[in-house]
Image 1 (cartoon, rainbow, N blue to C red):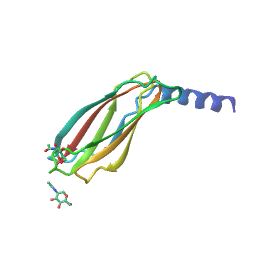
Image 2 (cartoon, rainbow, N blue to C red):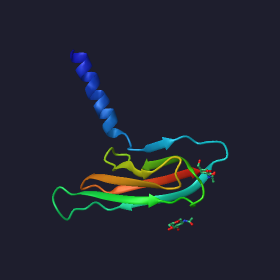
Image 3 (tube, rainbow, N blue to C red):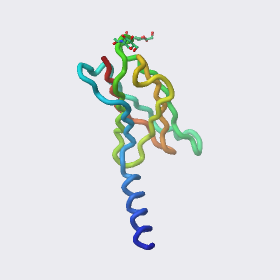
Length: 116
Ligand SMILES: *[C@@H]1O[C@H](CO)[C@@H](O)[C@H](O)[C@H]1NC(C)=O
Ligand SMILES: *[C@@H]1O[C@H](CO)[C@@H](O)[C@H](O)[C@H]1NC(C)=O
């Protein structure tokens, strides 16, 4: 019982350290990097309890179908924002990603879109 509680704590600590990378889809033969963007927003410290939220649509090259999307969290301190797909995605020509920061933290992601 005590041991399993300890394991859960260790696991939680490990997860808290992790980057919040979002990887959807798999590379396919002949696909290529069609778009690479930095997504950076400063922390919002104007009011108590505000998380910085930011939604962006990536249109790739408007021709290729998306095979894989990687949103790579550049914060390695465990306090990076989260990324979530809210529109389009693999098989589409566009993807809309919503980024949400922790309290008083910013957003710092590299987004890579592969397609063919
Ligand atoms: C794709 O289409 C969007 C919306 O029309 C446009 O903003 C963007 O510049 C286009 N991208 C390319 C690579 O042509
Ligand atoms: C994208 O997918 C559609 C539907 O499967 C297909 O008709 C089209 O040819 C694809 N586009 C490219 C550039 O492969």
